[in-house]
Length: 427
Image (cartoon, rainbow, N blue to C red):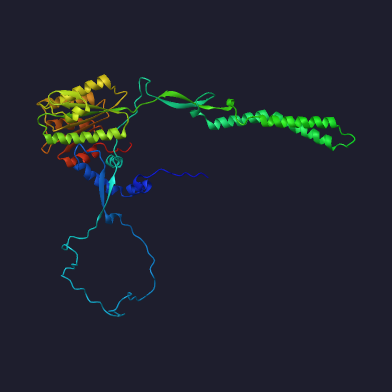
């Protein structure tokens, strides 16, 4: 029987096991608190931890106690006023059941103090992105052989100590010992039998010289048995590894944001918060996802992360400029046969006359046949414009790979984000 003892220290004298059990048990309460927190946060503090409160009544547990049993009458010790059978008078008060405490009574129902605790950054993000994934992620077979993974390929006689195969080495040593010791044991057994036969003879017929020779032979054979090593260098076996080309699930996410003059500062803040959630989600859950940031007004430019979130450039609106640039980047750097391609676009729906139809053609004829998924969010409290209508036609052609949602206020960001990237059931 083996025993494993975890001697890791718990931070601040807290039990890590009990903490994880508590998080699992009250997951639904914590998740609601996290969702409210995400909607209240600004861009700058989106990924910090959080202090979560749970009503005390929700964490109370029933308990059982042993009663005295039977019928009994009790008079409290120190009682000088009452005897058994007396009726107690109703206590005097100011009416309404008010007591001697400070403040006034309320008729708004029951209440309880809340139980508050802090979530770390890792725990907070775990709850934020629970149940989310990139839709339709596929393994792409690489054309080149740069993406390799070492895999086991049999046993080798040479290698480094870290790859030593203990089981095979011990098996080889055991087989060698059997092979080397078998003839010695056989000769030893024959010598011992001959010595026994010689010693059984009548003392007159015994041959002292032969007896001495047999004993010397037995001693020599026993030393040979002891000299056989338990394990030898020739017994060592090593796990052989080869580099095998692996299919890749590499992905790239194109973040396309409208920064035209029709996008108010409030709309841009909402778009940035949406993309920041997307950025944190990809950074945390997918190691091999690249991000390409595209800002557009009348012209589109590929920018870095800093400029995408903080640049104040603005202008008119031509959405097709961003889609054309996106198509060029895919053709030059991200072949669909090797990459999973995703696009997330945020706009207020305003677009130049006749450009919305061009956007639909670009999506239907060029982009959607190559993309795994396209998510479009329209940030506007007003009625939809022609861009939404044209995108609806694209969604009708690609219902599983094209999703559209509307965001009216900051509180809609997180629910919309969860709808767009929720985990799909396997078909």
